[in-house]
Length: 340
Image (cartoon, rainbow, N blue to C red; front, side, top):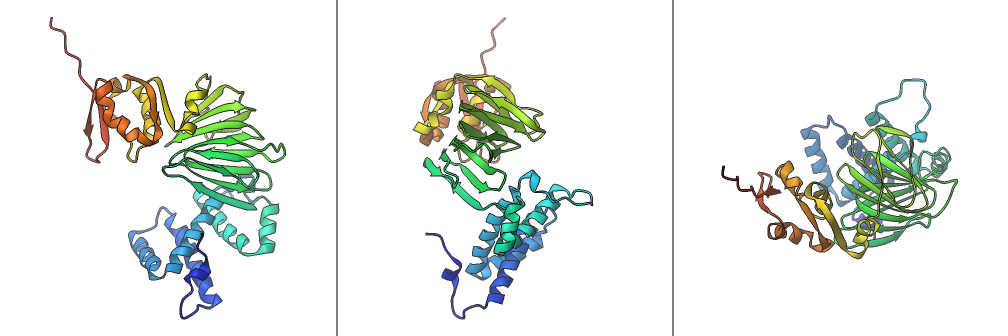
């Protein structure tokens, strides 16, 4: 059961003005800690404030939720101003403050909704070591892989999901007038109603379409996006001008995670390792390109990928070491030099 503000009330009972002061302080710290010039002394002061009262932590967590909403504001929500457009950091700070104010007042909140500034619905979902199926407020169904985190916001002109990490399979409820947008790393997928899978690891994203159609675009070249038809796949990573589009017959492999399986179809380790690392607490590394060219295949349990890593020397010509940070490093066993 979710905690509420009332659960933190203790003797003496705080006045509304005192509660407002705590909320204001939480908003200040939330914005300040997201600034690049936040000092060590300020962070120490924040830590002391956070420990001073359980209500402080509760209000700060609430502000982090609002920060997520502000960060997801659609581009069309940017106010029209005569002055030059602010930098992203400045706009996010403005959006944060505006969103807090708008959510605080019902009338202002309705105005923010009608202008497309704030969502009418906000949901947050996260998984650790279990698969999970959720229903979004619009009726769309989403299956979450292990270690996945995403949020959903319903704006007047669009439904927006932010995949923060992990992998998700979507069955989107059709609504041609209310597009469904999934933001993943530095790109996005836009649909009206369809079935598709989005896999993300660090800044790498792979979109596999099963039914309907989607538009995939990167932040470097947003435009109208590149259309996928069923059986097609798009890949992009940070800095890509456009996604790489290909026909795929590996839908069973891409969706095997829904049955708790990781399928590696004779892949070079350079391609397989990101798929493996998605399930590890600490990502493994490749020693060099020669190691990355070694191929691996097989079907593995997503709940036992750590065991897969430690067993690699039994099935491949490799050995494991650790770097200074304690990460596993995969090394190819040198081939014997032929005697001449």
